Every structure is written in structure tokens, then in C-alpha cells.
Amino acid sequence: MGALPAAGHRAGDSGSPAATLAQLKKVKKQKVLLMGKSGSGKSSMRSIIFSNYLARDTRRLGATIDIDLSHVKFLGNLTLNLWDCGGQEAFMENYLSQQRAHVFSNVGVLIYVFDIESRDVERDLATYVNIISALVQYSREAKVFVLIHKMDLIQPMTREDVFDHRAALVRRKTAEAVAIMHKQKPEQVQQQTVPSAAGEDLSINLQLFATSIWDQSLYKAWASIIHDLVPNLSVIEAQLASLGLAIDADEILLFERTSFLVVSKWTSREGERNPYGDRFERMSNILKSWKHTCSKYTGTPRNAEQFSDFEYKMGATFSMFATKFTTNTYILVCMPPGEARFNSAKLNVAAARPWFRFLDGPVVPAQSAVGGGMSSSQVLGSTPSGYGGEGSVGAPDG
Ligand SMILES: Nc1nc2c(ncn2[C@@H]2O[C@H](COP(=O)(O)OP(=O)(O)OP(=O)(O)O)[C@@H](O)[C@H]2O)c(=O)[nH]1
Ligand SMILES: [Mg+2]
Image (cartoon, rainbow, N blue to C red):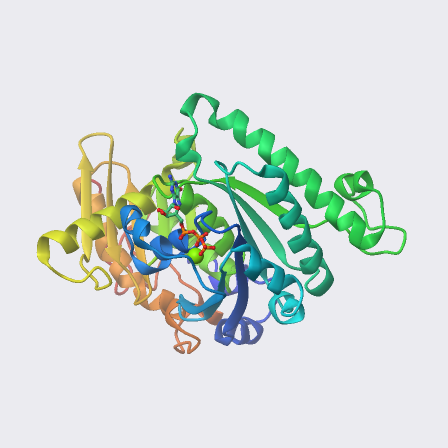
């Protein structure tokens, strides 16, 4: 079997290896606003995702006073400047008046949280409209994620309907807000697929999620938020695909080490037949809980690294392992059954680590993805059609 295509080239929206190298070296900073009414759950979700809080710990959180600014380092070359904006009315008014330019300039992402249990929906929506107007005024390109939160408080039977209804309302209000800013009719904004007569795209990049801190839905929403911000995503995806094909995996997930959010994933054709569409966020939730359990029973702090390897073998159905990969990531590999295949995949994943070192920071080792990419003859020997090769760790299927 010939060498797999060079990931650096395949990623190639930007073209040459030099351009890709420059891209890998860049550190990206993103201003992320976290807004919504007081008590809607903003600080709770932030603490669970980025600070290893358990859901029940959030009951002890006090109301955020003004803006709580934190810098979250994500994968070595992405820094999230997270603005957790206290949602009490006086603060909100202040953001919209005195602090307007300061708060709403240079925003990459707005995450707006609605408490589904809130009694005053009209008022919540009016505040939301004001926030969207300020955002459109100062950061027209920003993406907006609306989280309809505390869905655990809604009866499971009616959750979907309640969410759909609220989502439709939010979409309508968003279109109204954008239209007012552009002095157009809301229908024109909502239906717009082509730029307006003036040549500008008036629509806003809006995504909605139903979330709760008590299940994996939080991980789904935040993984989507993060997904678009991660630099070098095309390189990561291409490298994962090369690795997946080379070791004959069904699926590979790459997690950020603290949040356990899925940064990227690759699924084989066989793996795509998996009917569980929520398996990615479920795995985030499971691995994070596992990490917390390890911490509880070993006495290590929750923020410390507690596990390096997690294996699960499900007889003749499948096997998987999750392992510490690079400094900033964990990798989960799902394999068809077979002991030898499993063992060789583990060794090959370890051998592939240097090709993912760029995930740990802007400094790229000379032999990394750029230019050469990852080829089967260089690192990975255990491919379905050919074993061996220099430095490879191949083994026939068991
Ligand atoms: N049932 C339920 N409660 C939640 C959820 N998320 C957060 N909470 C609770 O909501 C309360 C308020 O959460 P906070 O995160 O402090 O709210 P906040 O939006 O940061 O509020 P301010 O800082 O005042 O703007 C806490 O007691 C949380 O435990 C959820 O998904 N479900
Ligand atoms: Mg708060």
C-alpha cells in the first residue's frame, strides 16, 4: 500500500506547505461573550466545561458581579477570552449604554442563555433583542449561539415541542432585531439567502441548542461553539482520517484534555452506520465523569491529570480505548473486535503522536504534518492491506 496522502497538502485550502506552516504557527484569540438573564446558568456551564465543576457544585455559585473575564487556553494555539457577563438588570443596562462599545466590539461569538423556566418570557426576549442590536452594531460578523437552558426542568415528553416553540420565537426576534438595525422587513432578513441590494449579507449566523447541566446536551452545544473556533481544523481532520484508515478504526474522537469537548472526529463508512447520533457528547460526559471518579477515589485534585488509559472490550461487538495523546488532548479510538488489531492500534496511535504535536502550541517540529504529512510507510504499519514498513508496528488481525 502506498503512502497516504500528505495531510498538510490535503488540508490545503491555503496551498503550499509554507502557508500551512504559517497557519499552524498562528495563535488565535477569540472574544466570547456569555450573556443572559441572572440565574439562567451561564457561570454554571462555564465552570463545568472549563473548571471541572460537578453539576451539583454550581448550586454554590453566587451571582456574577459585572463581568468575570477569563482566558481559557484551548489546544495550545487558541485562547478564548471568555466574558461571563453578570445578568442582573442593572448590569445589562450598563452593557447596553456606558460599556456598549467596550463590551460589543471585536466579538467572535455571543452565547446567549435563556432559562426555559423563566416566567417573564416577553421581557427576556426584549433584552435579547437589545443585545443582538448592540452586537450587530459593533461586531456584525460575530456568530450567535442561543442556548435554551435548564431543559431538565421540562417533562421529557414535551421537551422537543417546548424547544421548537421557543427556538421559533428566538429566530423571529433575531430577524426583527437585525431588520431594525438595517431598516428592512424581518421576513427579508429571515428568508435571505443572497446578499441584499446593497450587496451585504444581512442574515446573522445563529444556532440554537437545548441544554442542561444535568446531561450531555451541554457538551454538544459547547463542542459546536468550539468547533468553528479551533485553528487548523482542516489539518487535524486530515491527520485523523489518515490515522483512522491506517489502523483500520471505526471511529476516532479527539478531545481537549480539560473540557473533554470533542475537537474533531473521524468516522469510517462502517462507523457511520452507528445509530447513536449523540455518542460524541455522551463520550465527553462519560470520560469527564470517569475523571471525576478517579479523582474522588485516588484523592488527586480534580484539575490534575488522573488517567492515561481507558480500555473497553465488548466481546465480538467492538473494542475501544481512550488514551492521553498530546499534552493538550486525549484520543478515543473505536475498533472492530480483535485482540491483535486492538494492540497494534494502540502502538500505532502512540507512534503517531509526533504528527499531532502542533496541537500543543504554535511551534511546529520540522518533521510534523507540514510538507511530509503522515504516511503509512513512515509510521503506521498496521493497515488492512499491508503490514510492516520502517518503524511500523504491524500485527495481523486476531
Ligand atoms: N435545573 C437546572 N439548574 C441549573 C442549570 N444550570 C444552572 N442551574 C442552576 O441555576 C442557578 C444559577 O446559575 P448561575 O450559573 O449562577 O447563573 P448565572 O447565569 O451565572 O447568573 P448571574 O451570574 O447572576 O448572571 C444555580 O443554582 C445552578 O445550579 C440546569 O441546566 N438545570
Ligand atoms: Mg454568573
